[in-house]
Image (cartoon, rainbow, N blue to C red):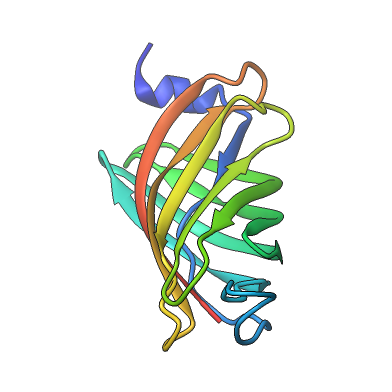
Length: 160
């Protein structure tokens, strides 16, 4: 089956993308943990393996000391030069933040319809600039059978 034909058969859901933009949390949290909780949104625009990803991503991070939670939502398109496929997804975020200044942060996104498909991102929280540059790979999959059809490496900068 060609890539184009496969794209035409998809009812796609997406797990995360690329982000930047404002949030609403401040300063160190409880104990020795930096506070990263807040609302974020930003554009997606990336090419991998000849596939263009464009769209919007928003998410809300919650935090209880070293534990991160929250939710994400994404909508957009994938385009392989021939076929344009609309994608969308929502789901929970789980993760951790280390104690101390400029701590490491790891979070994982999930989609309730295909809970075994996850995307993991990690980086270091830049306290002075209140941002988290992270790297990871977004998994795009068919929501009817949970088969991954495209993995998209990303570098994300989450900024308040």
